[in-house]
Length: 333
Image (cartoon, rainbow, N blue to C red; front, side, top):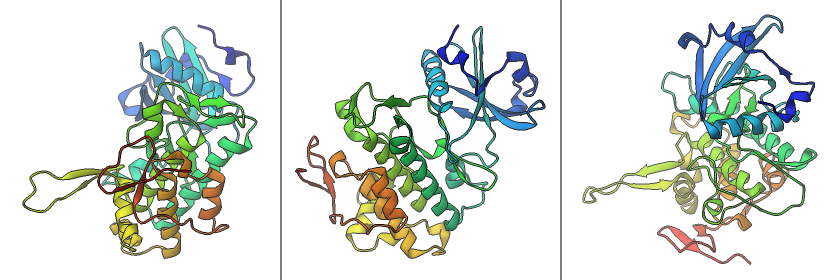
């Protein structure tokens, strides 16, 4: 198998044996996690004096092979302090391996939801928010081409030894020229984080990433999954499942948006920062892409360099969707 990135100079190409040895031939003891198309192992490369994470694409996965090639082509060209650094790759026979700098603190997802992890204090969460926003600004507007990540979610937000944000997994990413409109393609990503308009129309662009960013902001503030189960009154047989944005919007509409904050924080947070993150999260996660901000505008608000946006008391339905309970219909001009 020959890939066009073989001729590059950095990152480097590894031989299979050079990666099998530090992982004890990919033993279970060296497993560090699992991605969408394979397992992740940890190891130590003596020649580089570096601890690494090695992603092993599942054998026989056609989608995994596509994502492998896409990831190397995209991330090997990017340079930003909040991106996981690709050290190198290996492909030979049926083996496809990606080598990254090791993120000792794992994923944001693990820290938000795993019972055996210490709770992230608000100061750390707020820095993660700003770091992720800075990364998206670089991808969308500051690099030579516009990079659509298309799979922003907490499990792809890695944390280094100092809990700095490191965005990971560019297997679904696409490069487009700046100023180009929406791309039409088969919708991909993860339910709960995928732009609803993309799922319906097949069109994706930078504000599709902004939607996912908004959902992640709400998760960071609330420590709740994208789909929230709302308990009904006793006479009701079944509980309702609503999207996290709709759940937070109900608190916003009552003028009590801080009620949506993670109760485990015990009120130990900067109220102005919390309100800002929640409101920007709602702003970004609106159903109609025409109502969402650019990542630069959203980041300016998060940095308190621009005022909070005025939002309606109820979530607005997009023009392509019929009205549903708890959501106001509107037509964006």
